Length: 465
Image 1 (cartoon, rainbow, N blue to C red):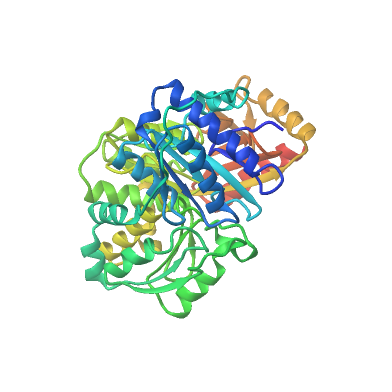
Image 2: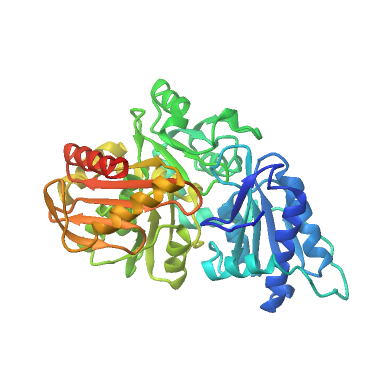
C-alpha cells in the first residue's frame, strides 16, 4: 500500500489504510525531512480535528517526534487548521502536523503537513516526505524531549480582533446563525461574534465523529437547517464552517445560499474599500473572473494560479496580495496566514453586512450593475479509469487550432491546470481531472443563467460522448 500526499495531504479510510502503524510511518518520514533540512531543533505543532481517534493519532505522532528529539507542541483540544497555521508563524516552528480529513466523509482521516511558512506544503516537500517513507532509518537522538500541551486559542482570537472590525459588527447589533457542523470551529467563530455583541443561534456545537451522518462540508445541501433557522428567526446572516474550519458557507437573510465565488467577489470589493492598498489579488484557474473585473477597476494585478490553495498561499506569502481565494470555499488576506481560514471569511462577511447595512443579495446586485453579472457552477462526473482516459484524449484534441464549442469560437485556451476554453463574450468552460479520484470536474461561467446552462450542457455532452 503506497501512501500518497495529494493536494491537502494524505487521506484514507480509518482502520483500512489509516492505521496507527501508517501514522507512525508518516510521522517518521516527516522527522527525517526535518533532520535532512536541519530543522529538528525548531520544534513542530501537532493538532487534530473531531474525527474518530484523531486525538489518539495526534498523540502517537507527538510521541514519534519527541522520541527523536524534536520538540512536539500538542494542542490541548481539537483545533482549526488556520489556528494551527497561525501558531507555526507565532512560535516560529519547523511546521505542523494536522490530523484531519477536512470536509471528507466521517470514515476518513488524514495527515496534513504544513512547513514553516504557514501554508500548505508545496509538491517538492510532499514528494520528499513520500520518498522518505521508503527509508525510515533515523538518527539515534542523544536525548528525548517531552511532549508539551498548549492552548492555541487565546492568541488566535486576539489576532482576529486585529484583522476584523469587531466594533463595526458590535454597532450593527447583528443577529446571526452559526453552524460549526460538529467541527473544530466551536468556541472560535461563535466566541468572537459573542464578544462583538451579536445574538447567536448556534448549531451542531458538540463533538460528533459521525457529523450527523453527512460530510462536514458547508455546502448548500448540508446547510438546510441553518437556512431554515435564518428564515424562521429573521436573522441577518447564516455562517458555517467545515470540519477543520478552513472553509466557509454563507447564507443570506432570506435563507438563500451564497456561493464561494460570490463571497470572494464581495470580500474583494469590501477589502478594496476598507483595507490598505495592495498590489494584487490571487485566484485559482477555476475561480470567477468577477474578481478580475473588480481588481482591474481598482488598478490591482490579478494572479491566476493552478487549482489548490497551496498556490494561493505562496502568493500571499510573497506579500502585497490583498486577498487570495478559490471557488471551493477557501480564502485568506494580507497580514494573515497563507492558509485557508473559514473563521476569518465568516467574520469579514459579518463586517461587510454591518458596514453596508444591506443584505448580501442587494450588495451583489449593485456590483452586477457596476461590473456585469457573473453566473458560475461546477459539476462533477464520476467516470471509470478507462472512461476518464478516453475523455481526456478527446478534450485534448479540442485544444488544437481554434475549435468551436456551442457554435462559438474559442478565443483563448488556458492549459495551466486542466483545460479551460474562454469564449469571445468572456464566458468560459473548464475541465479538470481529479488526481486522486475517478472524477472529471466541469466548471463554467457566463453573463446569463441561460448561457451558463448551455455551457454546462455542452460540457456534459463532451464528457459523456
